[in-house]
Image (cartoon, rainbow over all chains, first blue to last red; front, side):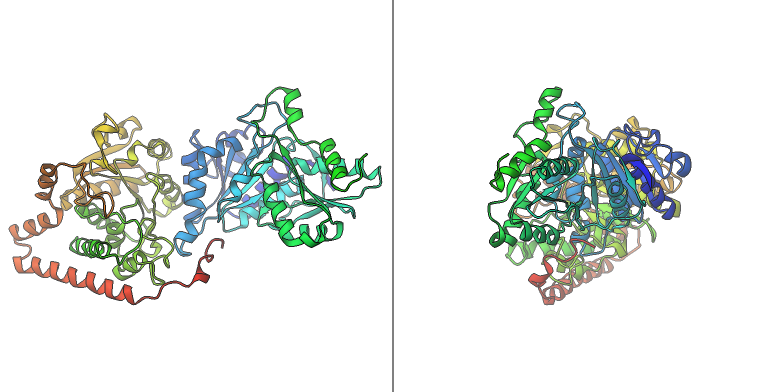
Amino acid sequence: MAERTYLAALREGLAMEMRRDARVLVLGEDVAEGGPFGATKDLVTEFGPRRVVDTPISEGTVMGIATGMAQAGLRPVFEVMFIDFLTLAIDQLANQAAKARYMSGGQLSCPLVVRTAAGAGRRYGAQHSQSLEAWLLHLPGVKVAVPATAADAAGLLMSAIRDDDPVVVVEHKILYYRKEEVAEIAPVPLGRAAVRRPGRDVTIVATARTVHEALAAADDLARDGIEAEVIDPRTLVPLDLDTIVGSVRRTRACLVAHEAPLRGGIGAELAALVQEHAIDQLDAAVARLGAPDAPVPAAPALEDAYIVGHDRIATAVRGLIGRPA
Amino acid sequence: MALIRAFEETVSAEIRDGRMPGLVHLSIGQEATAVGVADVLRDGDRVYSGHRAHGHALALGAEPWRVMAELLGRRDGLCRGKSGSMHLVDVAHGLMGATGVVGGNIPLALGTAFALAPSGAVVVVFFGDGAAQSGYFHESLNIASLWHLPVIFLCENNGYAEFTPRSAHTVVERVARHAETYGIASSTVDGNDVLAVRAAAADAVARARAGAPVLVECLTYRMRGHYEGDPAGYRDTAEVREWREKDPVARLGRLATERGWLSAADVAGIEHDARAAAADALARAHRSPEPGPDEVIGDVHG
C-alpha cells in the first residue's frame, strides 16, 4: 500500500479515467497550471490543451459549456475552484444540466462532473470557505459526493465520471494534504456509505472533514467506555439510508454532524429520515451539530470556534445518551 | 412558414378556448428566421432555441402533431409531456433544447460546438434582444471567439424584452455591434425577409464550418403579445400596423407570385394545406392519452 494525499489520489484517479476514456476532459480556471491546489497538475502535458482546457473566469457560462459538451457526447470534469463560486453557476446546474434528461423525456443525458473545493479551516474568510452541499440536495437530477478520504476522493470521482448524470464532487480543502494509506485507486460506487468505525452505543453520521472530527471524538468517548459508530455517507445523493438506519436500530441513538450551518443543512434531512424510519428504535430525538447561523469568519480564533470539532461532538454524544463526562 | 403560422394560430385558438395548459409564447410574425436558418443546415448540425421555439422545432422537421401533443401535455409529445412549450427537445431533428431562462442556453451551444467541431457540424443558437443583455451572451461571445467554435449566434431582435422596449434596457441599438468587441463577424438583416435571412445564414454557416463563430441579427417583430394572453398594451397601434405590412409569410407569397415562381392559386393552396395540416396535428394530438402519474419520476436519473 502506498501513502498518498487526498489531492494526489484524486489526481491519479482523474488521470486514470482520462487514459481509459478519450471522451473525458477537464476544464476550469487555471487547470493547465494545475489549479490553486494542484489537482490537475501536469495533466496538460499528458493529455494536451484540448482535454485540459483553461477557461476564463466565467463560471456560469463554463457550467453551461460543460453541460453542452456532456449532452453532445463528451464527459467533462469542470473544476469550480471554490464552491463559493458555484453560486455563479447554479442556474446552469439547476436549470439546464439537472433537468435536461427529464425535460427532454429521456432524449438527452448529461454526464457532467463538477469538482469543487469546499470547507473552512484555512483562514480564507467568508467567500472562500463555505460548505454549500445542502443547496445541491434540493436539485432533482443532481448527484452529490462528499469524499472524506483519499481513496474516496479518487474513487467517487471515478464513479462520477462514469455516471450518466450530473455529479458534483464536493472536496474538502483541509483534507487535500491529508495523507493515508490507499490500497488501490479504483471506483467507489455512488450511494454506498462507509462505516468508518463500528460501535454499539451511538451512531454518528458525519461528512467530509467532520468524519475525522467524529473519529477523534469516538476515540475520546471510547476512553469512557462509550463505543460510537461513525458512518460516512460518502454520497448525499444517492443516499445509503439503509446503512444509517440499520446502525441506528442497533445503537438507538444518532447524532448528525457537519461543517455547514445547522439551519437547512444536511443534518435536517438526515435527522428527519432517521426519525421517519427508526422512531421506534430511538431512545432520544436525533441530535444535530453544525455551524452557527453566521458566515465563515476569517480570524483563526473565530474560525476555530465556528467549526464543529471533536470536542463538541463528544460533548453532544454524552448529552444525547445521558452519560456526561 | 405557412405551416408554422397555421400551427401557431391553431395553438392560439386552443389557448383562447381554454383547451391548452401552460405558458405559451408564439412566434407569429417571426417565421422567416426559423425557416431561413433551418433551410441551410444539414444533418448533424445542432440547434438551441429560447422560449419562443415552436417555429424552430417545426422548421427543423419536428412532427407537428408531436409538438402539439407536447403543448397539450400528452404522452406522445416530443418530450412525453415533460417539456411543455418552453423546453422543446427533438434530438432526431437536431433541436438540442429550448429554454425558459432567457439567454440560459447560449453557453450550451458552445459546449456542443466544442464536442462536434471535429465532425464538421455547426451549432446555431437562437435568442432574442433581451438575452443580449445577459452575462451569458457576452461571456459566450468571448469564449466562442477565443476557442474558434463553430457557433452561429442567431439573434431574433424583435425590439421587446418581454413587455419593455429595447430603449429601456440598453443604449446599444444593434445587437450585432457587440460582436466586434470580441472579434466576431456579424451582419444585421431584415428578419422578415426569408431570402435575406437565408443568405445571411448560409454565409454564417460557411464561416462557422471553417472554424469561426458568427453573429447574425435578424430585425423582426412578434405580432402577438409576449405570451398568449398578454394584451401587449405597451405597444402603439401604429407600430403594430407598420409591422403587419411586413408580414414575412404574406411577403414571401407576394414575392413568389411577382417573380412567377408560384401562381396565386398555388399560394392559396399552400396556405390551405398548412391549415389542414395544423388541424390534423391538433386532432391527432388530442387523441394521445395523458401521461400516468407513475411517469412523474421517470427520467430524473439515467
